[in-house]
Length: 239
Image (cartoon, rainbow, N blue to C red; front, side, top):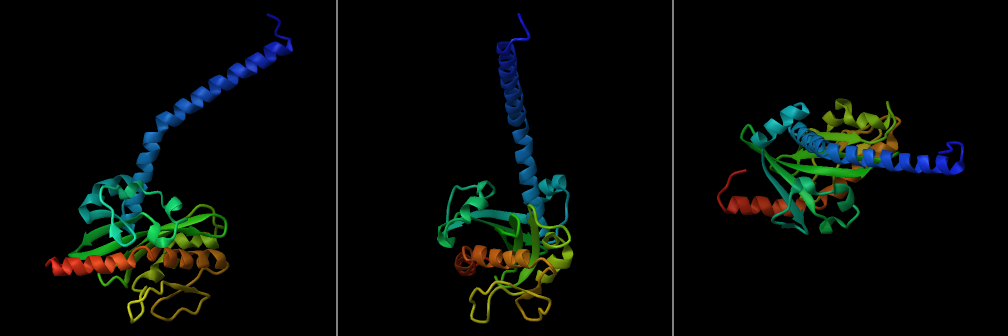
């Protein structure tokens, strides 16, 4: 065989492409269960963090069933039976109108109190942002908040994931005195009202993204939650 021929070079290159593609496909297939497991554990970790239960990924898997009593999926203010809340692709669902989404909802119990945990997904300056907020049983008061991002600027928009920003959300109200959804107003350093927090200095677009994300995502939950609490009260259950 003449290794100097073009046909040999092309043939060798073709074989290498097939071999490398096969190896990459095998690696991706082999690693997918572990990757899926990591994603699931991270979700559990963030859900728990929203009710101030801090845990590693491995610990979260153990602690999650101790605190989270229900994982529901709602659509158009109705409970959808037989769906796995963890399997919902929120990035896909938020492209739909609020009441047409399959929206995951987690109900947790801690120290005798019930919390409703809502997953969030939105858009920052450079890419997706996401998080979880937990609501007390009055459906208005935020108990805890967790945010993260894909590509926001370090020292600016990326600060949404740190306590300097997330701690402000505790005790803030998402409903007005008439029970109407008003969300959270992320302001430029002068927050002093019941639903206001200070935005990130130099991260205005990311801060605005958090505000829009909360308002948009909560639309799919509040009507259902009001009916849910009413039904629980009527049936004699205590939240």
